Length: 113
Length: 111
Image (cartoon, rainbow over all chains, first blue to last red; front, side):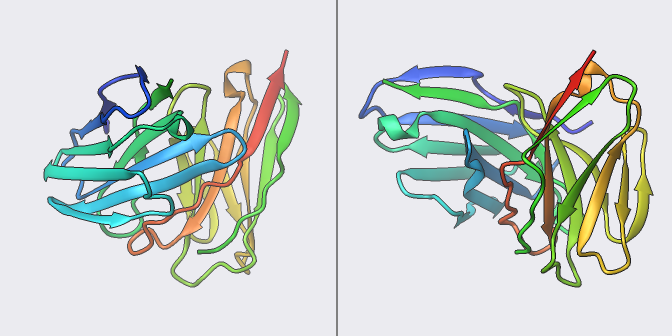
């Protein structure tokens, strides 16, 4: 079974802090994704990566950056956290080629005070 | 990306069959239809995927008519634990990374 593990289930940080969210997958998937989920807005794609050191912007990349130094690990970075980044963050991965559904972690609920 | 429309909510009772229809009028030739289930405080979980006709697995069935402009997820004999949000996604999973999760359908199963 595919396992996508996010480092924290709950996280509380302060405005202006640099925040790191980590995600690890154990199925050798090429693609990895970061989403945020907010009530009434569904899931919105922040960034995705299709290979080590490769990344592409999703729909809402502003205020975020990502890092993929190893195939199994994809990090989301909030450069200077703001209260409007309080949200549920979800990591996903899948294999390249059709059709390959994305497999999600359980999410990190991040609160910025 | 094909836009999808599905009901905001549905209520059901234990033991009943639940059918959720998703409209996707602009589906493209290479697009697949994928359904996810999400419980509170968890990430979405893949349920089923199809291209045409009918697909069945141990959890659900997916019915896709010939024109592929809609699809219906069928959950047989639901239980309280099937209460969740169900998302319909349409896209070419090999090339289209920007899958769009809409608001989904909140299914509430009552005893």
